[in-house]
Length: 176
Image (cartoon, rainbow, N blue to C red; front, side, top):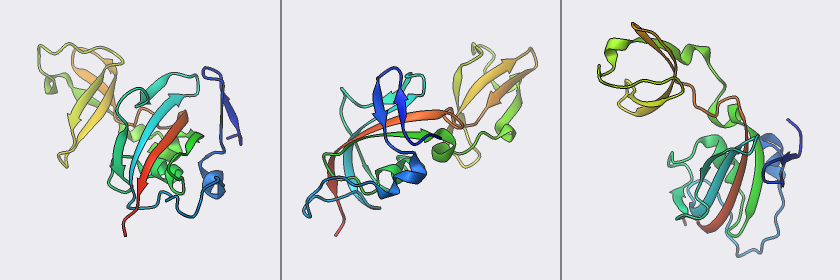
C-alpha cells in the first residue's frame, strides 16, 4: 500500500493507510472530544472502490448515529475513527482485507438448487440474503449455477479490495 493515494474519480487525496494512521495530528482544543471506544458519534460516511465506484454514502442523507464498539461498523473501520474530533473530515485509503478480512476460498460453497424456492429467479452476480447457523443474516454473491447447484460466495464483498473512505465527524459524546 502506498502512503498516499489519489482517487481518480473524485480527485481527492486520501491519508495514510490504516496501519500508519494511528499517529495522525488534527488541530483541536482541549475541550474538543475525540472518538474513543464507547463514544456515541454522529457522522457521514462514504466508501468507494479504488476506481471511484461508490459503495456506501450517507452524504446528502441523514447522518449515521452509532456507538463505537456496538457492532454497527467493523472493527477495522472503527479503528480509523479512533482519535478523530468532532468536525474532522478525513479521507483514508485502506485495504479491504484489513477492514473486512482476507478473501477466503473456503467461504465459496455449492448449494443444492432445491434449497432455493422453485419460482425464485437466480442471476449471476445477484446478492442474496441467507440465515447463518447462529441466526444472523448474511449476504452471499451468486457466482455460478446449473440445473442442480448454485455456487455462492460468502466473503464480504469488499474483502481483498482497495477502498477509499471519507468520514465527516459531526458530533462526539464520550461516556463519563
